[in-house]
Length: 358
Length: 257
Image (cartoon, rainbow over all chains, first blue to last red):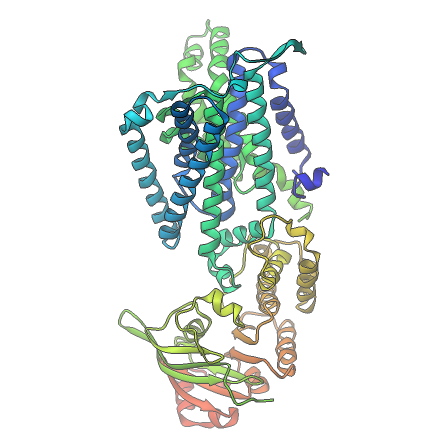
């Protein structure tokens, strides 16, 4: 059963299995383990980023496509559902219309970018995606009457997802079953389903061809695979799943804005996570997202404590000043790339590889 | 079992790279049941001619026909689907995939399963078994779970041939299949080519430098020199012709002839 769910692509490393289990249980039970809006927000963000990063891994790690337009598709999903709810009022019909509209727009854009530019060399493709994504981001903030400009839009979600909604009066394990909890589980289970779906794709005959293209596209052609078709399909799949990740994030935040949904910072976060977690593994998205989002949110707190503890020592206290958290995040990133060039998952799987298991 | 119609033919094909004409106005027909050796000194255009036929390159002039159909403007995947199988001179594998996976991907392409996203690759047992078979005949079974990049040069060449066999083509194109192989590995490859030839209905094209190999296998020899087709015919005849003697003397290959 588990083997089928995981498409027979098991973690193949005990520490990795343990880490994945911790993340899964942590996210599944997050509303009952932690209190406070912030921690639950971190958990939901991890769920969304697992999907977003895994869909990017489909392109970068499996197919070898370098794209900088991934946030654009994420933004399309978020804006699609956000603007639909803003304009049509809080109904499931609006959610459906927004999602369907966003998916269609993403599909068309991915197809057009793909067919025009996947024939050219990888570096030009990267440049084209960068240009299209920047243009899209500018357009989104310029059309302020429609998109809310730089401020973005807040909107109401369907009633059952609103924080004031109560499913029933009683509490479960000391937690009221409110709209926020329901939204969290909507995000969690959608993310889980999308993750398992992607795991299936990469272990299907199609996924194997993607890896062949990454390894040697010239040879893949000589075997009879038309690489343009495979690349375009991978591009569309990645874009559609990123769009769904954007939909989930918008439903969770009840807000869309260019900074959180379209900015290049989101793109760099995705790139960092996929490299830290391990490219071409899908599981890397889980470990990478969990570590990165946690560090992004709690490194500052941790450093404030460290700094306070070292308040007697002048240099060290300064070095660990909470304002320097980005510096330390950078150091952690450089170290992880240096010591785990294949990412955390790649590193943990080396043993299994040496044992000669396929 | 030579039939009248050629399966593969080129009609005045030329390709120009900048000012250099690598293949110049070559017309030639290849019939099933024959093994044609293509010889010539280094830089004569043999591999380029192969690339023009298997679709890696498009000619600047001339046409390529496959079963009478003009395939000049079709890419390599479409030509592969129509029955051309190609092994490369410089080994051209999927380095970070296992030996078995290299061949399994080939079998999968033949089975037309590449676009299946829903099933698991491992559930198509018949593909794996077939791939195992081709590893067995190329004596690579014991290496099946190693990465292609980790193989010795000789084993890489054998894997190249296993992939070609797994394509199950009607037209086999070998580009110096034994180059760089150790003496005891060469017979494995030659036996395989003999075996394919014995099937009787396959068209085999072989680029080869070793004249003893050519002599023992070829039904026909064509000679390329500076991009031109300079000789074409029966092996004994071609080897005796002055133009071949001259072409080979020029590059110090005379002692091989």
